[in-house]
Amino acid sequence: MKATLENNKSAQDNSIHDVIISGAGPVGLFLACELALAKCSVLILEKAENPHSPLKQLPFGMRGLSAPTIEALYRRGLLKELELHKRLKNPHQNAIQGPRRQVGHFAGIPLHEGDIDTSQWSYRLPSSTETSLISELKELETVLTRRAEALGVEIKRGFAITGFHQTTDGVTVQSGNQSFQGKWLVGCDGARSVVRKAGGFEFAGTEPEFTGYSAKVDIVDPEKLKPGRNVTPTGMYLQSQPGYLNIQDFDGGAFHSSDKPITLEHVQEVLRRVSGTDVTINALHIATTWTDRARQATTYRNRRVLLAGDAAHIHAPLGGQGLNLGLGDAMNLGWKLAATIHKEAPEGLLDSYYTERHPIGVQVLDWSRAQAAIMGSEPHARALYAIIRDLMNTRDGATYFAGRVWGVSTHYNFGSNHPLVGHSVPNFELEDGTTIGELMYDGQGILLDFDKNTSLKTLAGEYGNRIKYISGNVKDQLGLSAALIRPDGIIAWAADNDPDCSELQKVVARWFVL
Image (cartoon, rainbow, N blue to C red; front, side):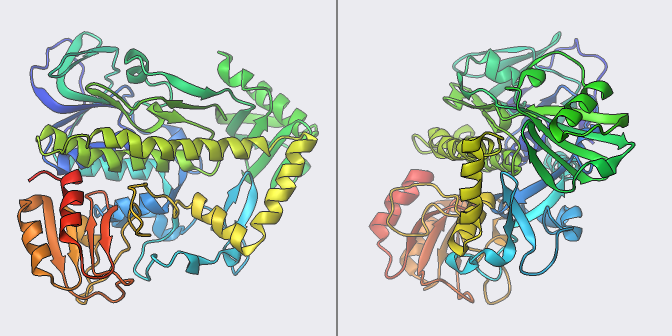
């Protein structure tokens, strides 16, 4: 087992790793798995000695997984290892079943399953994975850690990065009295990223409107609190389960930004003020604060240093999109950085990480800002809230919001007119029952040919083990004759009729090197 806590931190590590990752959260672990799958040597440095924080356990550690994340885990054979999602198919399992079953929300406005027109997503086949699932952060990290170790990733816990120095050839990373050598450094070390700060990355954005509280408490008189999500003149409160509180106090994020401890007395004062009751808390077991501050790095790369996850972007955890955004970063970056390390990357491939992921981050941050804007108690916020609620109660409105909440509408703009290019590949099922997702476990690109075109087979063969050629009939080919699939599952090229091989060659050269 390679995940270790070492007592002697003064010794020099003379080995040179392809990549050093700061942070052993889900993003850092998943990125490490992607790099190791592509035969890169990876070292993770994690400041925490114990990975099992109480905040990562239920219910604090419950995370909703969106469609792109579920597909990514499925395409690496990891989805089947998550046990919790088999019991809880969505974050609102306790909601009323049937056509009005709640399957998500926007700013607390419920999204109901029966209002969503899934036929608008014609590329989601019967063999597709779920659009949303729930997982426990602790379990997700355990599964990813186990996979990373199996692939040879070295994880050092209790090693906080204190600085680094980069040259044209690599990066020297400092942790206390010990230094480590890597060709690349990736900061996956969260919202207060040391890598981002030490690397001089600009972190632009907007300041918060509120301080959010998540707490486990004992309440003497819980009947004084109304059930469900309650917006009041001073904020919002929700008792999701007996003793588990979520509170939003529109203080401009003042308390979160202070160094004051989260005491029982403070939580009770905020809860009383926000709820307008004299409710009494007699025990505070655990509590954390958060805000709707929304910031994003203006670039994700500084020479040999890159950012991913919360190190690259932060926003309010409304709708749980932060984890999904970060895992999407890892899936996008992993194969590109590996190709760069192995000198198999076309010019500009690594730069496409920023050009593809930064706009997705912008969308998520704006989505978070929009929710915060209508959650206040001011008249204009309540008016916008009412309008959005009415829109979400229409079929097209609910479908739009579901597409955003679940990530179904996520795509990259590759400048193609084909409707599937830039989207996640449909999970085509071959005649033998094998799916495209299962064929992606090894992280290679795929040239999918439904017509057994010899020219396509020859072209794929020129790229050796970087592109697999898959041919044969599928149960529903959606009118396609062929498609080029990147290692991250994104369709880079597609043809409905006779494929234009000259066009395909240009596209292949954009993503792969002979």
